[in-house]
Length: 279
Image (cartoon, rainbow, N blue to C red; front, top):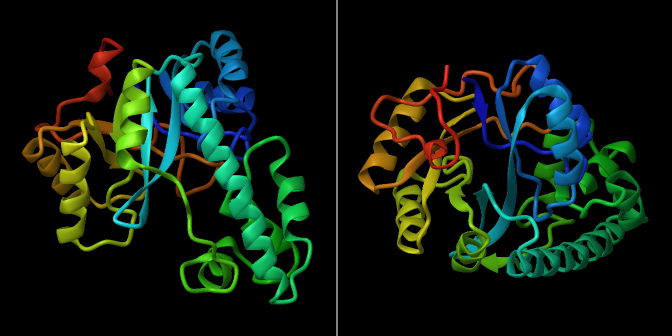
């Protein structure tokens, strides 16, 4: 069974519609896929209909941005009740925060002679909440740099012209909302926050102490040593292990379901809500 528990659609900053995402999952022989858009459940209804059509098992999910030690970290909620009032209230507040941040980024970029950032990012995002990725796409279209990576480094990262500090919910609030909605809280991509191993461990400990259930161990573009280390940490801190490509668009580096296996010592999180073995 091929499982991928972290993916995005046009409901946030992915480039495939929820239906297209499910079609690609079927094409790539993914049996179980979680749609985990940033701070929104907006793509799940379309995804559910398409999942039935393409024979993919959909896990209702979300990726919540939150703050820990003034650092932005992400918590994935899996197998959530999409109509839960408390979770939806938190996500509505998160989207308000995204809107305010987008306006602030645009104001700061205008001072650097890039006017119209909010309107440009909104046109790219459509009905989805605006993310830094949408702002980065607009900046590339304006000739600010020739790639998203360069735009982030030059304009949208901490200390640079268009950066606006996040004002997300706390780690505890994200975990609590996921649990109240019947879901499982997973620390997303723990090695992707530009932290030393010492601080990664501190983050994992804080997540576990706040009631988190699991951490992503298997990810895209990952060395065998990184995967083994994360597997050891998941066992050490008594967290279950998740797998996720963090898919946003088709590319040669990151694909749905590709190479998402777990070390032997890791306890799979998906046994909570699906049966069968991963291959």
